[in-house]
Image 1: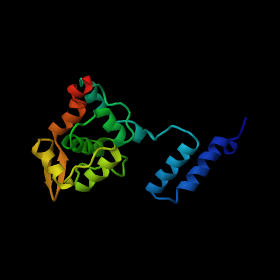
Image 2: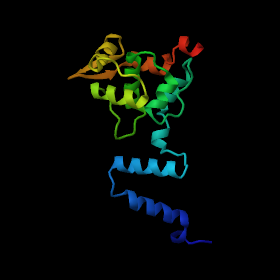
Image 3: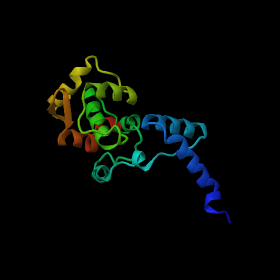
Image 4: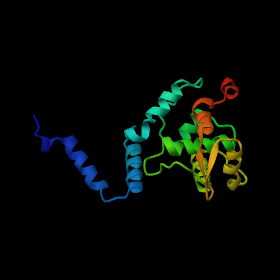
Length: 172
């Protein structure tokens, strides 16, 4: 039987922690992502791969099915299939509130978030990015919090959790 300090798994864990500790959070994620691809591993931290409990419970009652494990905005877009920039903006706000890595989570969004997460999701950028959140707020999905920032309201939340993908799209 191996002693705890001789356990190869424990040594590997200690080596990884020692190598990653001096790096900032973004660098740690890049290194971990690269190493997992290089070694053909499929794993994610439980915080990033598990949706919040409330989203699962609420989503389970929707006709479009529960929100399953989501790691990134692209996966969420593929699952929910927003058909307009307004729906995608609501999806981005939901992602940032519920699924984003802890260091990226926030309760309100702004123009720069639309641009960043539309690109990451592979969703076409609107012609006038600054107008997108205004239009989505006029559609009833957001409340204005001031200074170009918007918070997803219950209408927007219900759209994402219960209304997407739309029945017309899911029949196709």
